[in-house]
Image (cartoon, rainbow, N blue to C red; front, top):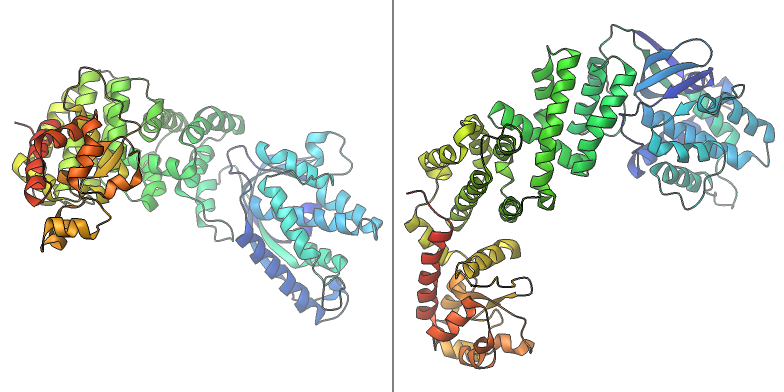
Length: 568
């Protein structure tokens, strides 16, 4: 490994091309990073002005920009280097130089040409792919070439274009007399002569991952998924193999999960499944390193292929519409409404048993989803905290894959205290008193929809257009206060948002009906409902006070224990 302290201008003046590998992230600097860079440059500009008018005479006025780590690709002719670290800084500074070139073109054509032919292009090279000093990743390439060729258009929405507009607004700022606040020729000299970087050129035997980790240069902090990606790609020594691995294995994973946050979550849950234990988000990269420390290149590639398979399962957990089996899709939708993301490590194992090794059936899979739903619903109504489930579900990943449903049920029943699966009696009490409406529309609708479906209609009831209705209304007027009597405040506080006071109904023809007394609601609205939950209210009760709400809650709780079953 060679390391040299270099002027930025010296780095890019040479007959070289710096290549951003396909697996590196796209250009991602934004306002904060641009602002910090601009502040550093203008401070350096002001400091140099204190010393005199000739930038080349300034001694000791420099600014360190961090390191740029390069891996040689081709030496001789146009030397080519793969950028391991530093692409965001190099790219931004080249955009800034291109902007200065554009601004001085009409007044100083000679300097404009120097910038173009010495710092932006390898001017004597005729082949298009080698002319540019920098070759970004494909998504950024067209915008970058437009900037270098002075052809950027206002419609371009790449982040690189926004960088150009940001610096353009700063360069065009005026002083108090309406004159340009910066001398662009001096600004160019500051950038090429006073910004310094440590150039690190790797030898073949150098481990780029280790160097990459230990750098302390300025830049956007990489997410765990970015670190994992770089680790895999740099473990593959052959550049063409690494690009193929990125294009056909990594990229489909990234596109399927839609963003790097979801990808990072996947890696965490994959590792939790693999290790059968809880792993924090900031531990992902270290765990991957530990797992693959002694793996060969072929074993590393095989591991990523395995991850790709599990990533498809994870995609269906995040986006249930991707699951072709409607029964399984419905079960996943239910779990997503209950935010049972803690179960995903275990469900990755279940998916693999169902789709890959085929040790469980569709019915087994659906039963597992229902077991987890029952466990989650019962715990929610009993007010049990969910943080312990981060430990519960990864620990279940060592269960026998040939009988996952039975093993899961047996294991969950054994837990006590904050990990327990509430019994029928515990669930009934919680179901009657818990203010489920305050848990959000998704959870409340799942409960009411499931209760409605439990009436076993000969024809499927269309639930989509229905709304949640408070029988005792949320807006409380004097009529309701008089109706409930002197204890109305307690009754309202205890029962308003509980299951006994909630139903489903088509939107009211007149919004004022919602706040009317119970007998008026029955006569004008409930009597016309086809929803069994509401029809039952209409048929069974003529008053709606504390006693009636309690009676209905008892009836619904008896239904609930049959929907969200506890193992016998």
